[in-house]
Length: 564
Image 1 (tube, rainbow, N blue to C red):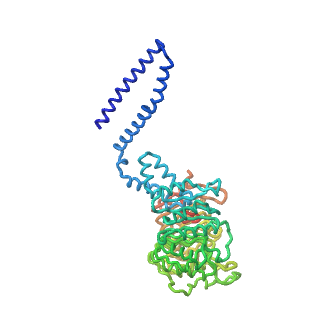
Image 2: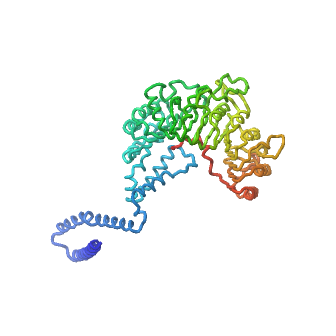
Image 3: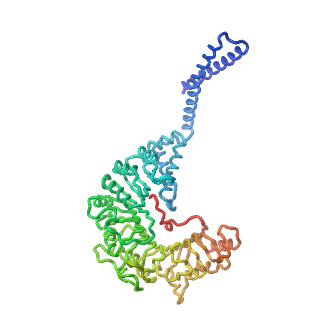
């Protein structure tokens, strides 16, 4: 420190002396021209050229170095070890979006790396801490350019590979083309892959990618696998053929894929078929099956046998999975066979660690089969009902069965949450909600999203002490959440108030618009006296009342393919 002070004083004196000489030289040459002006000018030129390198640049570097030293002394963040700073970065990067928000995979990747690059651009200390800790760069993105889906962001992918640590998390949006970049990652880095999330629009792309994965990964190392075949077909396809699966059954690559699956903690499959009869899910914690066509109900046996091994499973989500019963669907029979549990060993299934069972957009026969195949327990059971709940799926059509299948399937289970979103039958005003909700008498939470809720709908949801209209059998809701709804309550909100008063509601979240037919629409956040009167009544009646026109429950956003 003393040497720094002494050299600073010497530098100040030298600069002051040099400044005085320069000023004196200028005055002398103004009064008299030198004998050889060109020779003097050349000397000045050489001095000016070297001045920047010898003085200006080094002085600037010295000042920057001194400033960094000062900042480290006065700022506590500079006193943190780089490991702690990198850990803070990790939590910041991973927290760029809430788990309660449905963020598409590509958007989540962009958010994560935007936050990471911003933090590493703050200063050299932060940059060094970010660059040397590989876990911050372990997410390997393979994304198409918006302007050209065949050109991937190679630089970003390669930078992450260079900086990442021993474990990699691959997130690839492949479209209909297996780019050389993803081939290289799967081939040369397959042994480092910890989780894999692949989205593609062609099954052949997924098959090629998983051929490379099966050949190059380390059995037991991959813990997360997410696959989405993002095809545009909106019709229900025929039952899957052998060539519709990722690998043919009884092949070496299918055996390799089974080894991968046996070590998984998380498995998400969407619109893609995988032979499951020989899989063991003993380590699985989360399973999500979405938009799958299993075919005849006997095709469920392999899935159910695999689920029987999932003793650690905590979260099970089954969404828009189709299986059909025998018959052509031209009749209107009840189709009781649809609900019968297959005569297979290990059924019904006991899932001792299960915390949540989420069923959405299922035909009555599928809902019944699943609920009859899983032993009731203390887990949360969520039913998200769509227009399929009153129909049995047949090979060539459907047959109407009413709400009895829902009631029979739910019997014995503690269905605690019912959700009715935009795919609930037509509009709520055209459906008798009383028998639908009475089919799940144990429910305590109701979610309604994207609906037109008429006064008749509120009347059907109003619980009574007795009567012959079935409303005395309605569940006792303790929470009601309404989002993105149009509510017929501008002129006469009495039916709305009566519904709320008839249940022991402790929490009520309201989001949407008040309407009076097509004549008037008022937002809950608008300065209207009628809205104020209604919200004042809610606040006085419900212990926890919130107006929220922005938030939508993430369970209504299952169409969004997320990163994790």
